[in-house]
Image 1: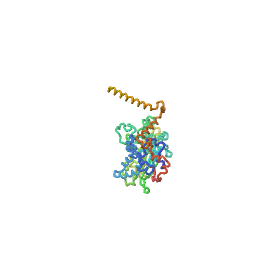
Image 2 (image 1 turned 180 degrees about the vertical axis):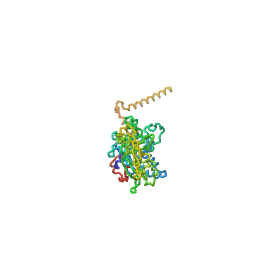
Image 3 (image 1 turned 120 degrees about the horizontal axis):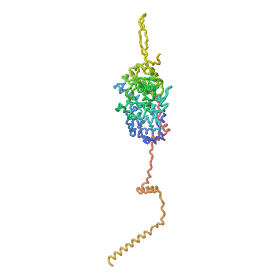
Image 4 (image 1 turned 60 degrees about the vertical axis):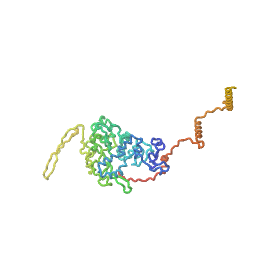
Length: 415
Length: 105
């Protein structure tokens, strides 16, 4: 945006709006003056950085919940940082966090009035307050490299998510305002049998009750009543994305530092790539009972914070580097839905040990698939095959050892 | 003449004098039929006139107070922030930000 575009107010619509009736200085500070320098004395560019003061008087249903809003508290970052770092390094980790991670914080205004500061800020609609944030100028402005690109089909040869491509749904279609504000949509979202106690606020995007949840709309799939055999067979065993997602972005090795020339913080990742990986569920719970889920590699390396000190991730292996993910590139038909054996017996789709960096094997033991599900068929039969292996131990002397292999195959395919 | 008779005579004389005074006043007034027909005056004019008279009566030596009119407060903020040309003229010099980031964020 041009500098003037970022601060221009719509003279036609804004003064007549609810917020337009409030004097500018009441929220932004400053002084009423025709002189710019005088007017901008003690100016508050982003009043909603203090939502209690700026928004709380009127929006009493939203602001009190702000403490549990992940966009505000960035609790998910600290959930993993606390597990990988040592308490004695908390101060330097906090410094690192402030320089490199806290920019993901989004205030009320960065969703409802302006573009996020992360992407340069600027008023979106002449200072009018939009109850529904813009998908492209707010949501995917930050959630762009993975969610935005996947959902909007910006990867070559990969189609956009069907909810966008055919459903023309924006983010708010699944991610409600209540979710964004740190509230539950309804009582039943938290109070579900048998866990009837009020859960603590989620400290991770994949913590607590699933929200949104595919089954909320796709009820027949959840109940197995849609006559799709795979839904009947795998309901509850597999996350929906295992069958209905396609290749998505993973990243390697993000390293952060402060520039010696400019003094600005910056990051550098070792690389990004597209792929599809099914692994064991690292966050298995009542709310996420799946055995297998899609996994994405996160760009954390043991020396990611080396600029700030040595060995700042002493518990690097405490968490997997291949993490639970819900790619936003859902398709009705994918390579996985072609047939049962599209997955069964297809090691290419699974996160096996050979696909994990050696230095990360220990961290990912809980998600690596040791044994690929065998190919299956309509009927099963037991066929014994005896093979003979000849071992030559000493020149001139031959020893023969019988080896028996038992294979279960479909009777129709039996030779 | 007895004293009561004298008193009565005096009272009668006084009454006659009073009646003459009233008659004199009446003869000085214009006959009703000769009064001009009063015209209907608009209430606003009347009220404004009454207001002006009342105000003059209160402080006849002071200047007449102008009726209060609603004055719109000038919002200097909006005066500038709705004007594209003004914003361009007063914009701070744009600093080129060189991103040193590498890879996906």
